[in-house]
Length: 379
Image 1 (cartoon, one colour):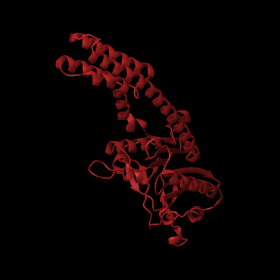
Image 2 (cartoon, one colour):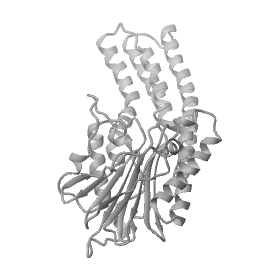
Image 3 (cartoon, one colour):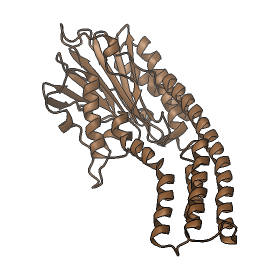
Image 4 (cartoon, helix red, strand yellow):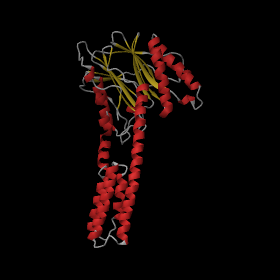
């Protein structure tokens, strides 16, 4: 989903590279229109503006061009370059060109450090939220993820898909808060869910196992433990893949997309989020939903449904998913997210989405190498 979020940023970057030339041209036009106006301050700004935007060679070239234009304008006005004003202006441009060259090297070093940091963050993201396979037990799977913090690749949202002896199990969740504390909670929950999904026979046991681990983590922290919790949906697919078993722990209800219709899979009774189980009993409600061939289960975090436009209206994914859609979870998610970024220009919270399509028998069995990319971060 990079094209939906950052196409306008790429355009801004391209235009910003033209800024030094634009300032140089503006100084020339102003001097020709109003000869009495001193344009040397504008010319002196050209290499400084170029320093963070262009390469070292182009930064020096910009300064040389500013000196040349300054010399020509001074000659045009009938003043000798040996005059104090002319020498002072050209000397200022030359000095600022040297300063701009040093600044350019500093900016280049910072950009290299940022690139390295992003590579490390990508490695951490792959470790915390590894890409899920696009085919599991004949089901097509796709995921999308976006951290709210700028320059961040990971945040407080999570998802996981595990093929276990008891069937295919998956989770999507949202840790309260952002930053490294949220990432720590994500790591704890995903590790616990992985172990529980592989070993425990039913959804209530998995939820209780995750709850015990989160309670243990909270007991070792002193900073407002009651404010740390995770909303989540845990799903198990029946062996015949015709039924969904779902435990919703205070999370936005998933959607079932099938034949142009969207069904909200709401739980029969509400449950507290994970991490707050000590405030409720041990009972874990589990809902059962029919899952017809060709249907797509769409799950997402509240960063999507709580995204607002300029008028403060929340995003509703249902209209975007109503109508003819391919039996492809990646295409379904891309359709929803395209509508999301038409609705709002910037997300205020972490957002994750997970979709699973029950491919009909004899359906599209495409080469996985041509399938939509899954487990990716959209920007």
